[in-house]
Length: 451
Image (cartoon, rainbow, N blue to C red; front, side):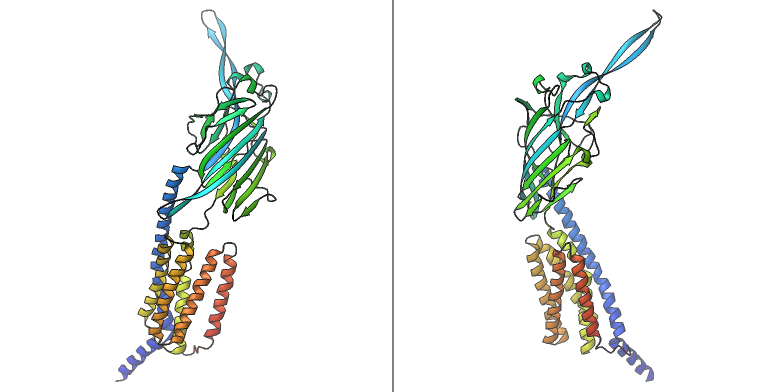
């Protein structure tokens, strides 16, 4: 008889012990992290699929554009005397081994005026930002200096001089490239370059009247190109000036050089930016002998950003999943403790699964609508479901209203954090501090003695 009383009291203690309840709730929170991790993987999988589709759209329209040039190329000869012993004459025969190399000279001035007309292209539920850039390029070449390499004037092959332009995107070019020097016009034709990510365009041999032998020459190029993601330039001019306008309102200026802050302007209708880069600002010189260098790392320009997309926002929302589950369980736990209402672990599990369903609803709806609409629909659905369910458990409209208000405040707080970028940490820290303070004030009324 006494043993039965002990068993009954032990079972009753398990049911009424706050410590046991807290342990069960903690275990359930850890269990619910498993479906949350699967949801994160689902979001990443959908995001990868989006990247594949966007990449395919960009390849068909035109990939990112990196412009390198114009560059003046002038071949020159190098003499390598060689002596060969002749057994018949018992003398040395002198030979002059001549090899031809190229000298590359960058412009003295380079001015690029660019207008970017951007738009979004979609396929199924995915979108990519693409653009058409209209560029007017002009500048000048000064008289090349071969003396720094001890190259004699008679070894310079002026009759084989050309001007070349390199670009990463030949597929997107929408006009015939023509370079004008003074009154002469030269078509730019594609040239095969081995082991290079750049496409080369080169003129035919320049006429005598187009050579900077005695006086500088001035050039003009008009380029219209389809591209995506970003547009960049390499500052090959002794003084490079780039002026850019666009109707895209979310630019990211990147590279080694940023635009002038005094002239930069970003509005909801687009942006304007200007760069000025001097030769002294760069880490490479104005002329090269032998090979054209790889100086892509010196590029600068703009990246056209799509504001944080639905997958990024959904992934950020799932990072707060454990917080939503923990705080919701905490509210139910405090109500259970204060009101002495018994809540079964299975009921906690159902509430937790309903909270995780919020994220699957969010990602699926956001693929067909805006993130705001998806978040609102998913939030309302989950809040109503848990609130109605809580009425069955807690048997009180007062507690039902408290649960609904708590979840509404929590989801609203998380939505605000997701939208913020620079102040997300600050607002999140303040919000969590206020939540903790509220819980501490409420928990003061609970008698923890004997548990």
